Length: 58
Image 1 (tube, rainbow, N blue to C red):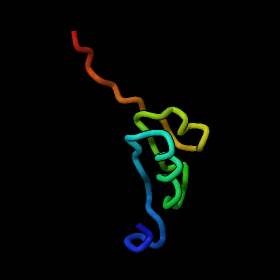
Image 2 (image 1 turned 30 degrees about the horizontal axis):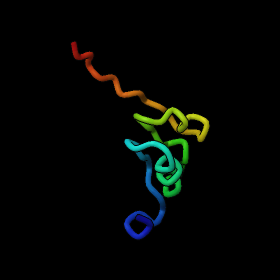
Image 3 (image 1 turned 90 degrees about the vertical axis):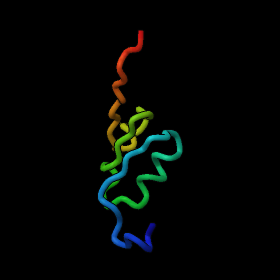
Image 4 (image 1 turned 60 degrees about the vertical axis):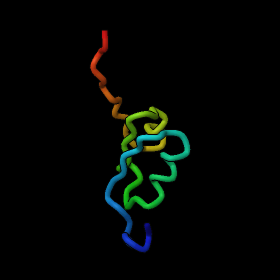
């Protein structure tokens, strides 16, 4: 990724959680510009948790 974006990237969206959050933050110019739809632990790392709102199936 550094070869494609040597100055870093602007933002990342995490859809996996766990260690992927920290890995997603490494190439960011600003580590707070990571959002996760699955891992609320992104918040203490400076990112944003955006829970995925799924429609209720009955």
